[in-house]
Structures are given as C-alpha cells and as structure tokens.
Length: 339
Image (tube, one colour):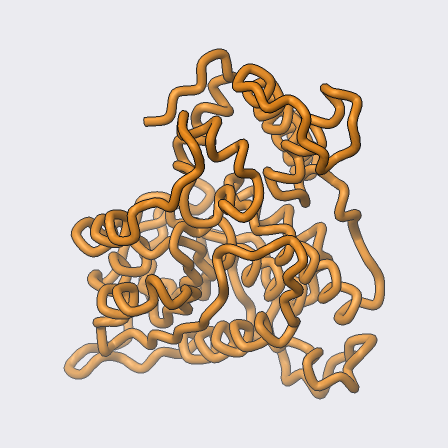
C-alpha cells in the first residue's frame, strides 16, 4: 500500500486506485513522481504479477457504466460531419446518452479483470438511478499491447458465446510520439459492430431471448485508466458529443481515468475533424495528464517554467502532487457542475 504522509484523503484514495502501474504515470515521464510514490528509484514493475492477479481473480468490481446507446437511422439520411469527405470521419449510427432504468443497450468501461469476469458469467447486476439492471455482455473490445495481449486473450476471450476483438495500442509513449487517428478508428469500428450485434442478439441454443437483460459492449485495457477511456471518449465524439460533453460523461462514471497526453492531443484533433470546432482547451486541468499537472504545480512552487523540474525533494514532490490532485478534482467538479 502506498503511504502518502500529509496528503489529503482524496489523494490517498486516488493513488491507491492507480497503484503507479499500467498507464498511471509512465516511466518515460514523471520519473520523480514514480520515485516519490514508490519511495524508491523508478523501476519496471514485475511483468507477470499483475497479469496473474487478473487470471486468478477476475472481478466485476469497479466496472463503469458509461451510458446507454441508441441506434439511429442510417448515417446517409443524417447531416454529414464537417469533413464527411474524409474516409476516417464517418457519421455514427449511434447516440450515446446517460443510462436509464429501461435502457437496453449499454456501453461499459473497465479493466482486464472486468472483461475476464464478464466472459465467465451469464449476467450481472448494475445499479442505474436506484434500479438494479441485469446486464449481459455480448461483445468485448480489448485494447492491449504485446506484453499483455496473450494472457488477456486467454482469460477475457475464452467464451465462444461472446465476441472478442483485440486492438494494439501502446500504454507508454514518449512525449514526442504522435498517435494517428486511424488507430482509434479501428477501435470505433469494433464498438460499432458490437453495438449492432448486441442490439438484437440471437438467443443461445435451447434458450429464448430474455427482455429482462440489457445487452452491453465492454471496452477495456489493462487497468481502464488510459487507453480504453481514450477510445470511449473518441467514440462519444463520433456519436455526436462534443469532447467536453464526452469528458463529462466518462468522468462522472469513472473519475480516475487519466489518458496520456498523446491520446488527449489525438482527441482534440479528432473533435476538430468531426465537428469542425473545439469545445475545450488542452490546458483545462481535467483534460491534462497527472504528469502535466505535477510539472505545472512544481513550476508554480519554484518560479520556473513547466517542464523544468527544480525541487527534487520528497517534501516538494508531495506538495506538488497534493496541489495537482486538488487542481484536478476542482476542475472535474466544475465540469460536472458539482458543489
């Protein structure tokens, strides 16, 4: 368990959730934060320990209900996007909205353990506005890298009754790395296909389709903090939301998501491609990766430019982290219109 002496409870809880692994603070950046959080020099985590936990203990804890999905008329009958001539910008057939107790098609966001558990169960309950909704996953969209994909496939992809599609996206990127929009478009196509299939799933052999279950597509990566939230945010934009609205929907369901700045920049570019205008700034704290906020707070504390690390002391790092978390939390609360 990470110890954060003097840090607010909210910081403690958030860091316990992140556990300084898989996409929370990449070792290519924020090395001082890694050292401060772990109490030692940055080091690669064990390659298999976390995977073994997923394999041995699949769980549906902390799976997030992003929203309900509604199937619309064919895209050709609706207004085209500002760049409809671009083959990568195709109007979506779906509308994403907050879930209701009578919703029958859902989008879920989770981690590898959630996907493994979903593939091993006939259904599970989710609370929606005080009502328990029985959910059955029909499609799993997996986002992983070479280190983890094989074991994730063996756990989450073992149920032949559930369609399992996999996509390769890096969990750790250098600041100068640029992610092409086509990388996310491939994931969007899988989500689209899953939604179309889940909208009217055929009953299993010897069974009758039950209207008491809502159908769902789950999008997941290793921890559900970085790559899969980026994909869900982009898909929400493709479904007609502004990026600000997409952040509001996703953060209300899963406040700990923290895509890398490379993926956040990609989402800003994608919103311009789809809608022709930006709904938000990259410098709003809720839209900044934790390492960016740490650099900003450290620079403010030391009178230097962001990116020029100066403190190098554990106490200063703790202060910067606490300030970064307060800044992030305040920005999210403002976005969600919470008092």
